[in-house]
Amino acid sequence: MTKLKICGLRRSEDISYVNEFLPDYAGFILSEQFWRHISLDLLTQLTSKLSDKITPVGVFVNETVEKIIPFSKYLGVIQLHGDEDNDFIRTLKKHTDCEIWKAIRPQTSNEINNACQSCADKLLIDSFSKNSVGGTGVVGNWKIIKNAEITKPFFLAGGISADNIKEAIEAVKPYGIDVSSSVETDRKKDREKIKTIVLKAKD
Image (cartoon, rainbow, N blue to C red; front, side, top):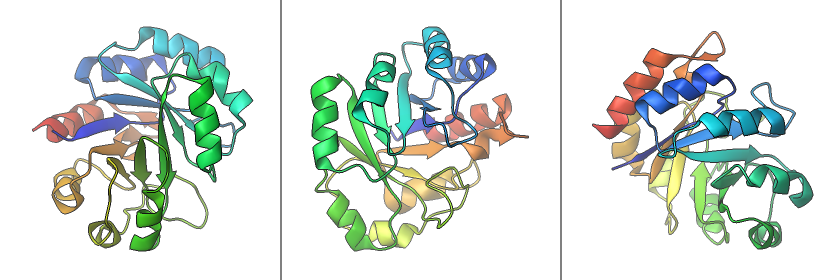
């Protein structure tokens, strides 16, 4: 069964919604340049209320290992969404007990093939945008994923909603699906949208 991650949680209400419908992963934006980001104090509060059936994922973009370590105590997964290389990932693995995911925004199948050489545990394949490293709501180029020789488990992100999640799973057969903006209304997580996409992912 395809896994589901709901990203960008930042309110206690968000936690109650995911606890009710139980996606596999809950994502928290922990780099300050994004509007969905939360502080270490708020991460501590939110993860303390999170069901133990849901794995907390922290999303970081071009941070130092020293910055990430204090957050890692409250996470099961560290998702790197910047220019982090294998040396950085190896160092992070030495200093934390978290699984490491590396996000990429490929424009070609070859970029995906190269990313499979990463020492990260899993990949996250997001849609490419010149203006943002994620959370754009833009659907990615699934054709380059289908044409790639992928050797790692990967999450598919970028513009996936209840309307196209089945199509996305059928098209590229990912390990998991990552959603954020498609389960929001007026920049807040929406209980009904979360319910709908969880049910579709598990169907």
